[in-house]
Amino acid sequence: MSTEAVAVPFPPLTKKRAAIWLISIAVVLLAVASFGKVGIVFALLFALMLTGIPVSIALGLTVLAFLFLLTHVPIEAVALKLFTGIEKWEIMAIPFFILAGNFLTHGGVAKRMIAFATSVVGHWHGGLALAGIIACAMFALVCGSSVATVVAIGSILLPAMVEHGYPRRFGAGVIVTAGSLGILMLPSIPKVIYAISTNTSIGALFVAGLLPGSLLTVMLCTVTWYIARKNNYPRLPKASWGQRWTAFRKSAWGLMLVVIIIGGIYSGIFTATEAAAMAAVYAFFISVYVYKDLSLKDVPRVLLASANLSAMLLYIITNAVLFSFLMSHENIPQAMADWILGKDLGVVTFLLFVNVILLLAGNVMEPSSIILIFAPILHPAAMKLGIDSVHLGILIDANMEVGLCHPPVGLNLYVASGISKLSITELTVAVLPWLATMVVFLVIVTYWPSLSIWLPRAMGMM
Image (cartoon, rainbow, N blue to C red; front, top):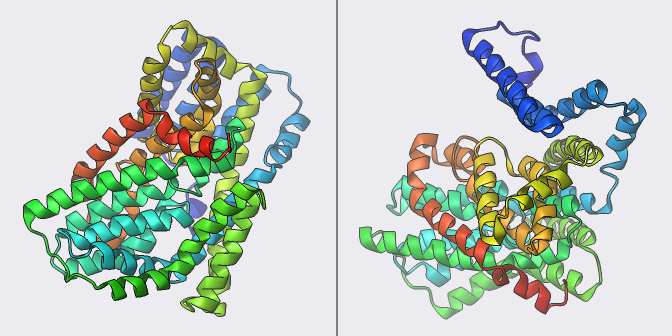
């Protein structure tokens, strides 16, 4: 049972909690005085978040408090929106991709990708670390979750790196940042959420992540190779072409999922949501019947874990849909877009503003909540400035990657901490060289839109 389930309903009001409540009230009053209804909405939201309430619940409470106290919207409309808001075909892609990722994580796909990557680059300086980054990139092509990528690759590779004489911090730093590729490459849950929030093509967003993801992979590999060469970290014996072919052949079943997703969407055989369903079925097949690393008796456990995660995400989305309904009812996105445009920021300054906002939000919220709150606000302003919707989506994805790799809520850090047995403080220091690389990459993605939109445009997807 979780600690939340047995928590005392009304904990004692300590000095710390009292201070938080006073600050929250002050924030609400200041926002109301300065920005009217817009200030009320966001002040309520952030005040509730400051008290430690989960973001999803804070979203729902903000909507209910505002609608019932300051508007005349009937309660029936709120109840109806709870159901109709998530009654979208595209949302079905989320549980299917989660299920596919769990099958791949437990089905032996990751270790075969690591073996192939190691056979190719293992003889270079820092070969095992380079293999880890490439394996993360390959796994990201078929998974769509950064946390799953860190778990699948890190749990196998980190012990091997330590055994071969690599510093534990070095190995953990590599895996934390390379794992973030999970939400940038092909299938990605944040991309699906962004597409739902802004009515952007999911297929175009999937394909748009390939070139940026490849560039980030190269950048991370370059930094890793330099550090490994500088410190003379171990190298593995060079594999023969026969060994490389054998390793590729064993990993090919997992990599075929890339062909299924891109080929199916591009050829029009199925939609992105149907591609997610196909991915789940295919991942089940190769995990149970081809690689045989997952037995049929373990399948219910994987299904239950996938259902739990899907329910959590859908609950967040449901409350965010209510929040979007409130913002639309009060015309807040349009008002904020007009306010932003009224400042004559220009494209360059606006994109800088977007990055700053998203990086700050990454300190206190996880990616799904950030996208659901900020995408409907930033998207209208971006469209009026002529910024492509797909480019904005990849830019947001890149920001989410950075947020996953630094405290206080960087999920990759916490997962890697559990695998490596290092503290969050140690990991925070360990990831700095690669985190700086990711910030440079973020600047490139921000101001080089062709990197994101060239491929989907060339494939006729936008």
